[in-house]
Amino acid sequence: MNLILLGPPGAGKGTQAKRIERSHGLVQLATGDILRAAAASGSEFGRRVKAIMDSGALVSDDIVIAAIKERIASPEAKGGVILDGFPRTVPQAEALDAMLAARGLRLDHVILMEVDEAALVARLVGRFSCKACGASYHEANHRPKVEGVCDLCGATEFVHRPDDRADAVRTRFEVYRRQTAPILPYYRDKGILRTVDGMGDMDAVTRQIEAIIGVR
Ligand code: AMP
Image 1 (cartoon, rainbow, N blue to C red):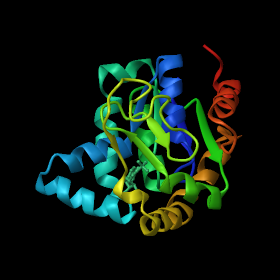
Image 2: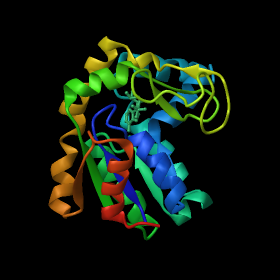
Image 3: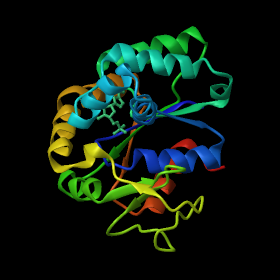
Image 4: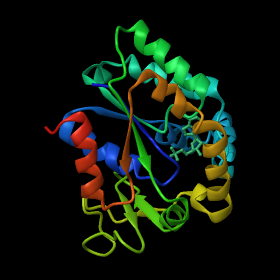
């Protein structure tokens, strides 16, 4: 099974993708994570990518398409993938169709997480994650069970993303409206777009996604 989780920044795509990855034996492909790893490498390319990401703008289609193409061709992706943060433009959506078709694969579900934009700003500005395993937390409503210790892996270092600053968040929403929302009709026309209410608690959102993709 291959699926896409779509939605504006902070909709909870990464959190849900990690849950489904574990329960359904799929591989999460998150272009944001792939690009953050490139940015952390400190290379000249990494520095350029980091500057774009920190501003909230999109990295060029060529770069992200090449990164996803390489991962879709990898042996781990054979059992199915959850795309998180890709595609974000119509050319990326078209490139994805072509690369899946070339491997005899197809998209089974495109799931749009619908959310309230004002609430999302608060969600983004308060979020942080485990530096070791990437588990997501929130200052107000999802702190680790033991203060300062990751629930999943026990690590004690946490990070805030530079692009979760208020100005970069505003840019990311504008980019979503202008460049990413236009891919919704693309998938609606193919008849594979489904929506879930992304504002409920995490378990409720997972249940809605499982109602679409099946429970394992
Ligand atoms: P995310 O972690 O998905 O919120 O992505 C963080 C940032 O990485 C975005 O604001 C973009 O700068 C960049 N990025 C992630 N995925 C893509 C993509 N599919 N196309 C272009 N830029 C991307």
